[in-house]
Image (tube, rainbow, N blue to C red; front, side):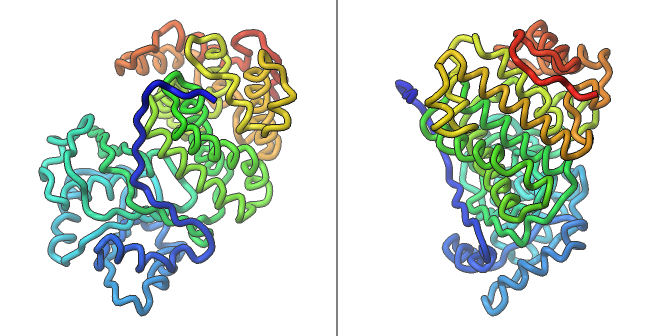
Amino acid sequence: MFFPDNYEFYCPVKINSGNRALEHLPVELDALNARKPLIITDREIAKKGLIKKIAGAFKDSGITMGIFDGTPLVPDLKLVRRLMNNYRDTGCDSIIAVGGGAVVDMAKALNVVVSGRPEDLKEVAGEDLIKNPLRPFVFVPTASWTGFETSRFATLGELSFSSHFLMPDLVVIDPRMITSEKANTVVSTAMIALAHCAEAYTCPAKNPMTDTYAYAAMQFVTENLANVIKSGDKKGRLALANAATMAGIAFSNSPRGMVHELGWTAGDISGLPHGICMGILLPYILEYNINSEGHHMSDLLLPIVGPEVYAGTAENLKARRAINFIYDMQHDVHDITRGGIPLTLKDAGISKDALQCIAGATVGDGHTGFNLDDCMVILEHAWEGKPVKGGLQLPVHS
């Protein structure tokens, strides 16, 4: 086991997962000294009746809730200011975000404002400019994630924030809230989790704590993704939600890797779900990193296939076997969805001309350790479906 000379790890997140987890919310809020939460969600989630399930959990608790279900796909400062006034005028003392993506981003931004931080969010945009703890913040996930929900990161329009104070105090994962979704939503969420954890688990800056979160999350994804797509298995959906929760925590304590950066940029430029792009790129970047200095690529096999296969595989073949497993899993998902989940960037509809734009935008963001040539090699191989270093790979389906 790799043990660094020194490392840092921070996680304030309590996780409450399982049947009737919602019913623990009143007690958990009381422990946070909160009695009047404002629930932030969107109309799609409200239409599914999920807010009624939360309201039922508060029955006879004496807790009064406020509800805002109008979160747009792209929240802005004007809406945050309006919600700030509503929060303060009604005497709210905490926030519960129900959903993912924009819902959580807006809830985090609102929490900065109502916690007495500068009302102009531009003053705290950036790295670690939020200097004090915020109001109690609870996250109740549904099925769709961006990967930032349980992390230290948030965005609002053009503003980006990074602070450990943005991580939720509590995540409540209840199977009644994890509804069945379309395959591309399930796959995108799962592949973001797998990509974030694979990079955290193999990067030179890994540590025993990020390993713990990443290990379990990768197991949950590889063991449950195909079955969830096939049958909508409820227990499998709960496992994937747990994987996404743990992945966000590991991601918060690790440097951003090339899978995240290239995949996120590819999603922004193409309009595809970011997780679909990250999933396509993942095995090619892992393959590219096999001989990269400091990367712990052979470690990846253990959480993906388990101790028996790991022990029976020669050391020099472990990294390759882990990557081949990911290729195999992608082909299984492709087959289950009858080609609905693409295997290559070309199949995803990204033009070859766009690859230079994706690489340029990624390198242009100033990420150390990335260069244009590295990015183009990976993107070109992922576009064609061609192994980066001549390793074994199943044929790409036409």
